[in-house]
Amino acid sequence: MAVIRLESMEFYAFHGCYKEEKVCGTRFIVDLTVRLDVSVAGATDQLIDTVNYQTLTEIVAAQMKLPSNLLEHVATQILDEVMARFSVIQSCTVKISKMNPPLGTYMKAVSVELTKNSLGFYEEVFDI
Image (cartoon, rainbow, N blue to C red; front, side, top):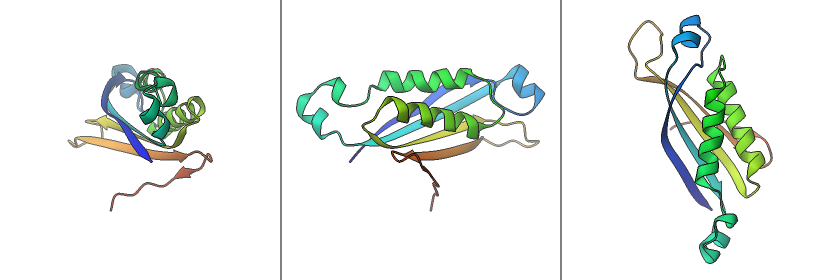
C-alpha cells in the first residue's frame, strides 16, 4: 500500500455561513491523501497505472470554486469525485483548513478532515 499526498494546496474561496465570508472570502489550505497499490505503476513506469496528480489537483480546485456553507460539504464533494474518478484508490482523506476564521478571536485555522474508503464508507479520523 502506498500513500500519495498533495500537501498545502492554497485557494482563495467563499465557503462559510456568514455573509462576510460569502462576499469577502478567505484563504484555505487543502491536503489530499490517497492510499493505493502502486506495484503495477512501479513496474511499468506508466501514468495510466496510478493516479494523475494534476487530475487530483483539478478536482480539488473545481470543488473549491463552488461556494458552500460548510467545509464538511466541500470535503464530501472532493472525496466523492476523487473516488469516482480513480478506481485504484482504496481510501482518500481530505483536510480543508480555513485560515484565520472570523470567530471573534485570532486563531490560525479551523479544519475539517474526512476519509472515504473504496466501499464508500466515511471513516472517522482521530489524531492521537
